[in-house]
Amino acid sequence: MKVLIAPLNWGLGHATRCIPLIQDYRNEGHEVLLLAEGAPAQLLRSQFPELRMLEFPAYSIQYSPGKTQVFAMLRNLPGIIKSIVREHRWLNELLQHEQLDIVLSDNRFGLWNTKVHSVYITHQLLIRMPLLLRWIEPLGWLLHRLIINQYDECWIPDFEIKPNLSGALSHLYPLPSNACFIGPLSRFRGLVPEKQSIGTLLLVSGPEPQRHLFENELLARLEEFEQPVVMVRGLPGQKNIPENKNITFHNHLTYHELAALLLGASEIICRSGYSTIMDLAALNCLHKARFIPTPGQTEQEYLAEYHKKKP
Image (cartoon, rainbow, N blue to C red; front, side, top):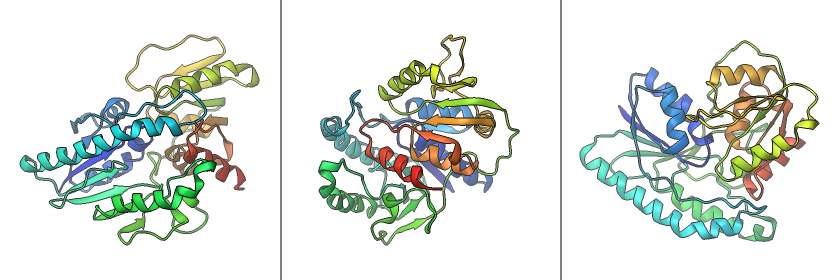
């Protein structure tokens, strides 16, 4: 089969959790094409340089540097809708000259077509709203379900029963008829790397400008860390590295190198993105994590609190 795998370009998490799917399809002898842009494209190229990479402009998202993303999302909404329509048309045009058997869309709303078997991947059936807008969540769930219903299948990367990793995000409401749980997706699945003992590991991730702000926030708090500090900046493809006598910087690491640091760290400080949580769970490192959610990103705020309460 010929399979197109397309992660959303909001941070690196959607791309990293597609890595085990890419590996599985390739191991089964299928031809895999990738659709990615920006940093996710650089990450996937570094892992799979031999695969054909298609490009299409990412959703035009500008995050706010402030403590809430509500107004930023409202400003972005017309651009998001326009991008969904454009990517839907793009897939239709691609299918005029490219024979595809499956399209795997990781949270990209417009990559479905009746001419190809289309699969939508999400852990967030429920779109978490800020407290003052919590009353609108059922409507958001219904609208998201309308999108999911355009696809032949919906894959939820989590466990169906407790304990699970996504909580209410995928377990509160009844599942769409085309949805099923497939278990967590982690690039660290099956890895048994050697542990590299370090003190505090700082993982910086997410879309700009919040990624940059998070890095600066952590650097300003270096005095809090009593043990040696390592920072992974989440910048694949970038060569310039800051200098600081109190910290070891890496712009990006292979997943074998990163797994060794995660296993050997005494403490991990990171965003509470769902792909990060799946990676930590795969290495049995969740208990070492201190989550700092992206300000105003309600999904991460919920997940940080959800995993804070778990034993």
